[in-house]
Length: 101
Image 1 (cartoon, one colour):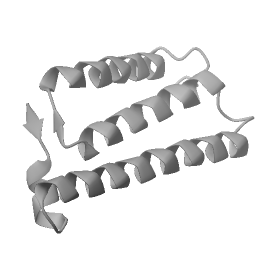
Image 2 (cartoon, helix red, strand yellow):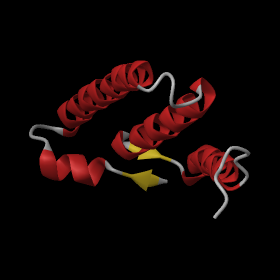
Image 3 (cartoon, rainbow, N blue to C red):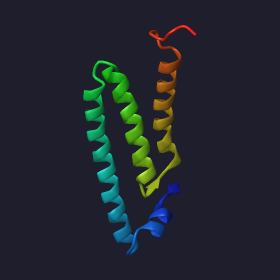
Image 4 (cartoon, rainbow, N blue to C red):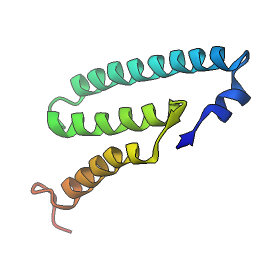
């Protein structure tokens, strides 16, 4: 699997157990902050963006943030992010309301 523990070892002080604990705290703060930011951005852009498109984008960002800040993940976990990325690209390419070029 992919291991981000080396990054935590370089950045965070203490033993490996303390580094994992601090890494989890950083992960929770980032994911909670992204959730709050997503809600605030949707309130700001309510009339400009579809709820489901906004939710899909936020799901992708939160999922990638979770994978990047996780200590140890397996490569096949990234398949879900790849599938969401494919859905987002398809929505952009086949958008019904786009302007003619």
